[in-house]
Every structure is written in C-alpha cells, then in structure tokens.
Length: 314
Image 1: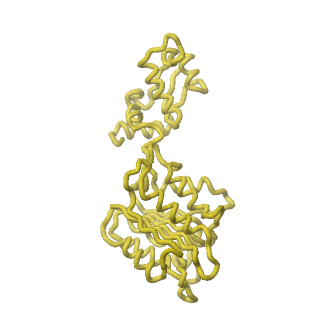
Image 2: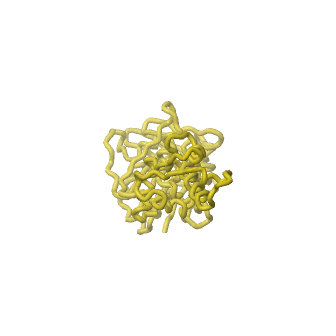
Image 3: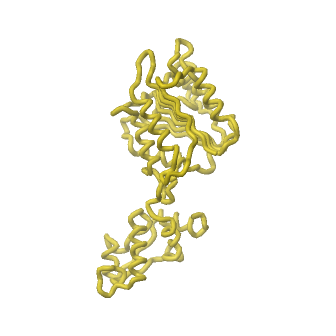
C-alpha cells in the first residue's frame, strides 16, 4: 500500500501565494496513477481555500500519514516556509508570532519514528533545506533507514515561482512524467534529484537531497523508452560484456542482400544505441558500421544493464 499527503496553500492572510495549489494539484495528478493508468498512490489532497487548513489539522494529517506499516508514505508541501533561531517551519494560514506553523524538526521526528518502510518528504517552500538541520546549526539530524528528503532550496534560500507554479515542483513533475526514468521505466527519488539538480543553474536555488536507504523505491512507473523484452536480449547479442557484435551490409534493410533475421537484430541494436547502451566501433553512426562491416559494443551504461539482465534482475 502506498499513500501520499499532498498539501498546497495559497490563501495566507498576509503575503498570499499564487502557485502552490497548482503545484499540489500537479503532484497529486501525476502520482495517483502510473503512466499505464494503473493505481499508484492513494492521495489525500489538501489545498486552500477549498479546505480549512490549520496547524492542528495539518499536524494530525501528517501523523496519520506516517502511522501504520504501509509500504510507502509520501509527504509533499507547497506554501510558505519560515526560519528562525529555533529552526524551520512550514507555515499554515492560522500562523501567529511565536506559533508560525509546524516545525520541520517535528516532521522529521514523525518520519523518523514511522514504521512505514519507505518515507519520502518533498518540500517546495522557502528555507526548505532546514528540514534535517536543527536550529540551522549545520548539525545534520540522523535520518532513520528508509527516509528520503528532497527540498526545493537550501536552509538559507528562498524558493521561486514562475508562470503560476514553483520552479522546483515543475521539474519534479517533469521527472515523474518520465524525464528521470531509467530504462525499466522507474522514477526514483534519487533520479528526480539528479534531474532537478542538472536543470537548475549554479546561481539558482539549489535543491537539497538527504537519504538513508539501501535501495531506491520507485515513486512512479512510466512506459520504458525501450521494451523490456528487447532489453533482455542484451546477453544474446553480447554473450560477454567485452564482446563486439560484428555487422555487415546484410543488417541494413535498404540493401538488396539484406537478411531478415539480421535486419531484426539491427533494429534492436539501433534501439540500444538510441538509449546509450551501444556505440558503433570506428564509425559515427550504426548505419555506416553496418555498411562498412564494422562492429558495435556496449557502453559503460550498457554493461550496467547487461549485468542486470545476466543476473536476471530484469
């Protein structure tokens, strides 16, 4: 069982926001189902002003999220963040001085103490990186096994909105839609971070990634860029990872002497090349490798997937 609490707050009495509800809706829509339409997360979506959101009600919902022993629990928040000498806070509309919202340290404590196998916290708010850094002292709180934190900015940075939504969330949604998927179609917290980190420039807000996991769980499955059945043929074409696959003009379908079986194999090899698993040897393109009777070989990533196939992990 996989459950997610997705929160977006625009309706603040002071300094209202304009993209957080949009962000929450976008996250909820993308994680509710995998790309093939199969169920993914059971989502509880809370947005303002459609629902009454108070510090007490949100804390209750966070406690409920991390209770029980389900497989995955995901908490997403988009709204105001606040930081002071006692640490970082996600701000609720009923904030007041000395009671600004829910402490990020408190969220971390609830997530750390949860029996849920995999817990993921995604924060898109100013000073979000304060989660896991008590009182902004620079001393990292230990994350319990199975906990991953991904935030839109460092503890001392603001988070930006453009075109009616957060920059960070827009990138996360793109990643979940397949931008960060591996060749099996899995989107993991680590791959999302890598995608976001590469997209944001050196002078932009910097995402923060903290984790203590022995494996990455998939947050969403998308259609793989290459069919799994084709991927499983890697060991057929390359019995040993250092082997080269010899080509000749009979592999090219436009040639009069083309052989049907070779043409089918060449299509698979070209698919491997398109996703970075294979490169031609001594030629720039696979076509010329075939026409000039050259070979192709596995790349470093190709070897990685060859090993997964060989070990029957795919």
